[in-house]
Length: 524
Image (cartoon, rainbow, N blue to C red):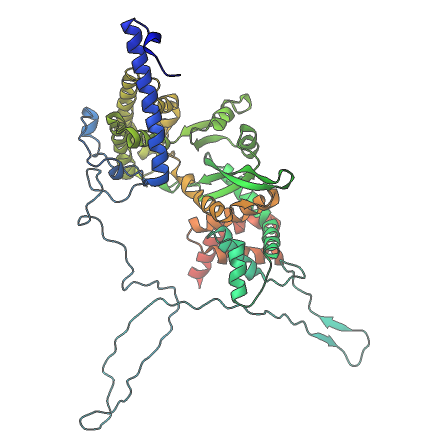
C-alpha cells in the first residue's frame, strides 16, 4: 500500500530507518530486473575482463608482495601478467595444425600427372626432377553394409547323422537386425555427441534404412543393460578414492498418469587428480534419480568416506551433518560459486565492493595457475604461504563491509553466502589434494545439459538409467582422449562374446583399456 503523508512517523530517526529500508528493497528489485534482462538479452561471460572494463590496482598489504598480480578465475581465457584480458596483438597465437596433420591417420596418395611429358622445344622425353606435395584432411562417408554370417554344415558321406557346424556367435541384439558396431555408433552419437534418436532415424533413412525410433531406443536399453556391471564397477572405483566431486542438474521425465512431465535429476560424480599427480583417474559417472534431496544423494554415496567437493546446495550439508556420516564426509565448497554471486551483483548494481571481491579471488587463482601440476605437499606449502593471507584479508573485508549495508541489499546475500561456508571454501588451503572449486564436475555435467536441451525429456525411469549408464562410459572415454565409439564397440563385443568375464571387468575400465592398447601398440 502506498504511503500517505498523514501515515508517516514524525520521528526523524524512524524516517531515516524507513528510507534506508526502502532503498534496500529498491536496490534488490532493480537487481532482480537487471538480472532477468541479463539472462534474456545479456552476455553470459563471467570473465573478469567482461565484468570489469579496467582492473584497479589493489593495495593488499604485505601479502601482495609475494603473490602474482590478480588474474581472472581459472575458467577464463588468455590473460596478460596483470590479469587483464590480453589485447589482440599480444594474445597467444592460435594452435593451428598447418603442416602438422596427425601422423596416425592413413595416407592416400593421389598423383596428378601433366597432360604430356614431351618437351615442347625439342619433343624429347621429360624427366621427373621434383614434386609439390599438399596434404588435406579427407573424410570417407559412413557406409552401411549387410554383415552376412555364414555357418557351413558338413556331413560324412559314409556315415549317417554326423553333421558338423560351428556354433552361432552371441549377439548384442538377439534375432535383431543390428550389429554391435551399429548400436555403438548410435549410442555414441546420442550420449557422447548430443544427437537425438529422431535425427539419427532421419540419417539412417537417408541411407535407405528406415528404422523406428522405438527400435533404436530398445537397442540403447539393451546396450545399457549389457554394460551396467562395468558402469557400477566404475562408480564403485571412483567412490574408493578419498576425494569426490558432486553436482546435479534437473531433467524432465514423462508422467503419463498426470498427462505431463515431472522433474527428476541427474547426479554427476567425478574424479580427477591430474592437477597434483594423484592416483584418481579422470572419470565421471551419472546417476538418475527421482529427486534432489538428501535421501537420493545419501543412497548414492553409501560407503563413501572422504572429502566431497560440491556447491552450496543444502542436501550436501544435511548429508555431512547426519549422525551416520559423522567424521566420514567433509565438505569442500566451490570458490567459483561464491565468486559468481559477486559477479551477478556487480553486473546489476556496479558495486565497487563486488568488483573488489572479484579481484581478490582472481589473485587466488593466479597462484593456483602457478602451482597446478605440483604434488600435494608443494601445493599446500604455497597456499599456506601465499593464498591464506589473501583469504584472511578477504574475510576481514567481508565482515567489515557487511555491517555497513542494508540487509535488503543483494550484496549482503553474496557476502553471507561466502561467510556461512567459509570453512568449506578454505579447506583447500589445508589439503594440497583439493581444488578451490568444482569446475571438474561442472565441465563433466555439460554433456548431460546439452543432451537434455536436444532431447527435452526422457520417457521413463528406465530411459533415464540407460542415459546415465551409457553417458558415463562414453564421456569418461572422452576424458582420456579415447574415441568413445571405438571403446564402446570393443567392450560390448568382449562382454557379449564372453571374451571378458565378470571377474575381469576391471580390464574394461577405460583407463585400463587404454593402457592395454598402448602396451600392445608399443610391443608391436
